[in-house]
Image (cartoon, rainbow, N blue to C red; front, side, top):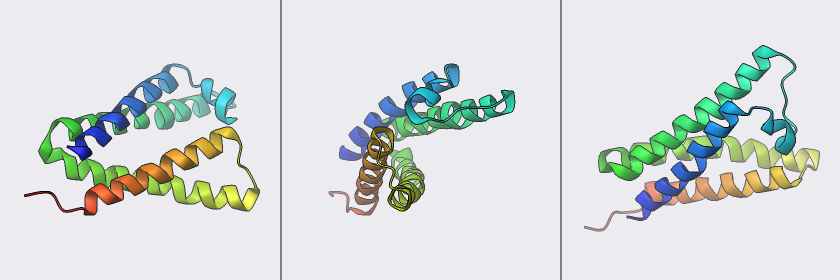
Length: 126
């Protein structure tokens, strides 16, 4: 039950954010200082921040809805969040960047990685 709620909340974060970034990639320049210098860069932002984020959200929604997808979704989410949190925290410390976007992302990613790890490793009630 807790895993379903966690995955459902992640889906509610990832899907709208991904779809918004897909349609409005310039938004990333406003909030994160990430911008494209040409069409290839714009497509890259749309694919990575739009398509990938939306796909992760759909995976989370499947995991929330279907018990057979729950553990694989949690494992995938654990790797995604750890892969973002570890370098973001490390590079934030190295570069002294703790702006609102970076700090918010650190908290979301590290916290979500910890939750996913807990949910993957805990014993299910009989």
